[in-house]
Length: 74
Image 1: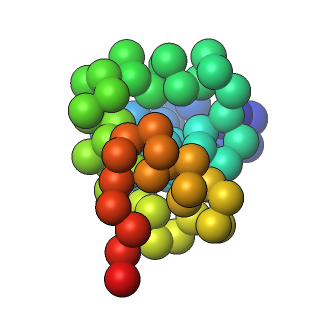
Image 2 (image 1 turned 90 degrees about the vertical axis):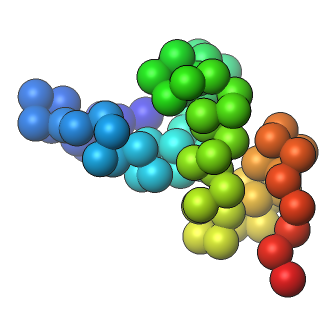
């Protein structure tokens, strides 16, 4: 999932929007479990997902709305 990132210089907190977006777009089940562990469980990931739904494609946005019970933006 993060093959193109230099992990020795990586800041998981500063890059959380990027990481969650990458997992939503390209991650597998293990990646979802990992972000839950890093970012405070489903509620922590939900808070991050709310901030990135506007930049997701329709399919990924629909997945996030289902998984985290988010309302569609108007």
